[in-house]
Image 1 (spheres, helix red, strand yellow):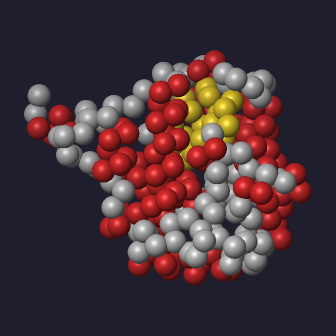
Image 2 (cartoon, rainbow, N blue to C red; image 1 turned 60 degrees about the vertical axis):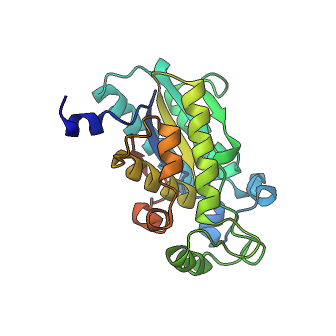
Length: 233
């Protein structure tokens, strides 16, 4: 086997993954930052009607991808954040596919929750996101006061990936989460796909190795629209 071919075989994951940002939510409509677990799980912050439509469309698009890849619905798993807007999105998708919203088909994973932006941003205008993203670009290890840094989120997303890899095998996994977490997850997975360090040949080790400032500071390059579906690995 040639050196290049060895590199291609380094990342060994047991499943295939797609990410889906939740549909347009009531906080999105109101232009509010809702990032704490306390507020994020409230029923009044679930999907807006447009977001339900987006989730239904995403479900149909994903079903087409499954057909193209000859993946049966029996092999699909939905892993989602506990926030009301992501839970609502996951339920809509499951309904479109006629999947029961319970194990083993659907699993809530706490580490897929929204990035907490801290008390100085909570329930304020979403225009303030840019302040955090500017900070991220300068130093992804320094988060907003009382909130999570990019590095903090990256660590728990790596844990979420480890949970999914350990509990499922041979599945098509739809990860339903939020804008910042999914940007950060894609940043790590993209770096992992390019990782050539021979000391690591499992996904968990590589995801840990790529959590460095030059990589994490670029997460905005992987932004998703509400309701946007994207294949990752």
